Image 1 (cartoon, rainbow, N blue to C red):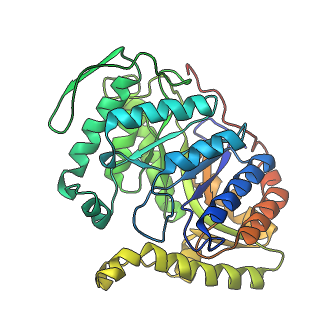
Image 2: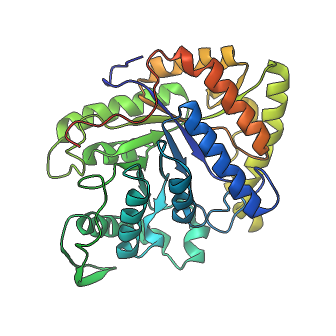
Length: 362
């Protein structure tokens, strides 16, 4: 299936690796997740995108690079990357070099998600001033992208300084650097990403997705190969829509299972707000409301297929980023769900395929 953005649909996986989403033993949980990604690769999923969070049960991977390096050695085709690395949390020289390592370890399969972080508590734990996080993000990104292409890194800024650091011995496989991803829900963030040619992942109801993608395409047309464009070598960026998905043999049982485990996800995503007693600030999207909005997709393979095919057509996305591991779903339940999805849903997307195509000029 080819949509108006000119590319065939790709299907990837989004994951937090919540503390509750598998074995209570964290080492075993990591091993379960590696097996899950290996199975996803076998089933034909295009990419695996891992969130970064700190000091919360929403994630037990405070260093996504460590987990992704393990995945690089256990997989051979599926593309892997953070969604997103929180740039203010890193020394940009160190992160640039680690991205080079990851791209080499994965033979050029790395996808580089970038962001500033949206949780003030996580910023506070690392001594990052939230009100300056956007400024720090921009400067760190400038340093990192320069570091991929110069022999000596020179930078004098407000937050970072590098005086001729020799970096010529480390280069990513992908030239000039791996594809950049950005989370874009608000109109301002969609326009920001479009001006810079970043791949985007958006969320919310399908009407919101369509507005975001239309805005992106209109803006991208104006800014492609201008001074603002960070990826002029990519003619058609990836325009992703994120969804929770659970597939079962019986609709009623699938709904009951997803509802129970999604309640744990809500507890996890709200943990830091609850910890400090700020109940008014909780991120609460009840299960039934999420289903009504089309953000939570639950049912048999046929039902999930109908909903997703309709959403892809209506939104114009060229990438689905699906979370099959939310809340307290066990490793076995998540594996069963993605297997049913691969058997019953993926074939209905006429041109869904393995791997990410080589983009024009890459």
